[in-house]
Image 1 (cartoon, rainbow over the protein chains, first blue to last red):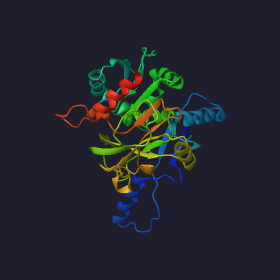
Image 2 (cartoon, helix red, strand yellow):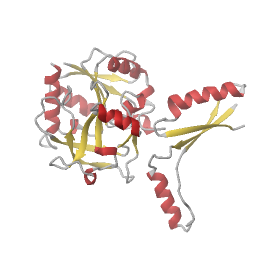
Image 3 (cartoon, each protein chain N blue to C red):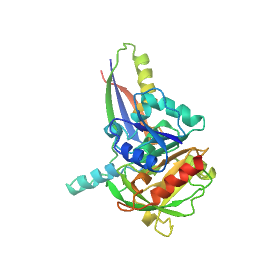
Image 4 (cartoon, rainbow over the protein chains, first blue to last red):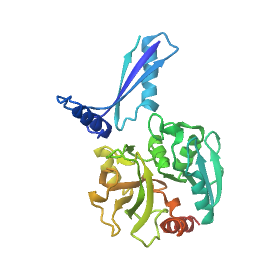
Length: 80
Length: 227
């Protein structure tokens, strides 16, 4: 089954890339933006039909590799 | 004194480090990332570069490579491990030193000479160096040192800050901070001070005809301290 993961920067962590994207959008005429934060998205196709077990495994992947918990949060969601 | 330099796919300062270590008397061995065993070493160096193309996060893939299990064991048993630039990024990803290295504040790749002030000399790396300020070279895109408030307090309480960016007189003002690092931090130790991670490259400062000689000072001092 497919599991999706969204990685976002924690609230207090500076996101210079998000800032530049914000400024660029602003320059393009999108003037009503308060903030842009950039993150990462993963789709993991895992050989496991039990949704809970699959999510547990993906959570372990998040903790060990996909996210750096000093600066990032992860959110696991069903893809299909 | 025996040293080992680990080469990861994408390392590009490994041979410079080999030249530097040999110049100052180390018997150096190059070790491939996929090896399981670390040769007998007095010093292990994780060199600069772009291991695994900086995929996911700088240093994250390299920190999980086969040789790193031996490096982590070596470090945890008190062995001297030094990570330069990408090597520092690998060290933070293993958790051997606290914090992370974020994208530079102004989103520029920075390549220039900088001054760093030695913050703590009570360790094998900087003990007996007379200078307070060293001129090193930096070349990085992700050198913006960050850690949580709790981690910062712990780092400061344990005197783990090794070097700070400064001007040539040792002034560590924000204006001499090239990349946005917290407290101008350019390098830190683990609690026990046997592990050093730093963004500047001492191996690029070992020949007066090419650059400066503060790297020579550093390596000469290091090998003498290890003897």
